[in-house]
Length: 92
Image (cartoon, rainbow, N blue to C red; front, side, top):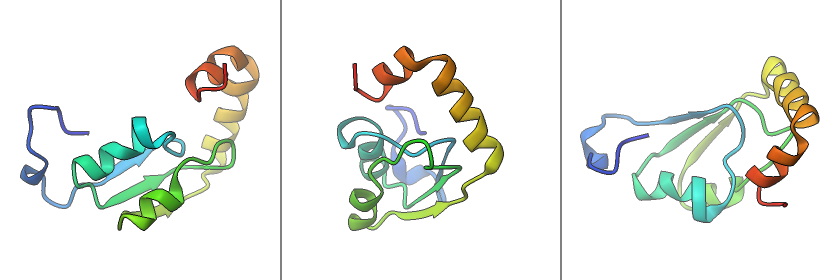
């Protein structure tokens, strides 16, 4: 992700690679629009589905991988850190 001091247009063909689906419009996904990132590669959205439709409606191309290792890693993390996970996704 570009720093707040770096204009988005200095990056050629930018994309964002995310281990999990990006969450809230007001937090994660809006940065793609703000910085003009046209493509997001998502490792998995099995454990959490974020704002896919919102991003696509604004012209962001999404590539969903559903990487088995990432799915399992997130399932383990969520199970072992349920309070932290709930806080992170805004459910606490």
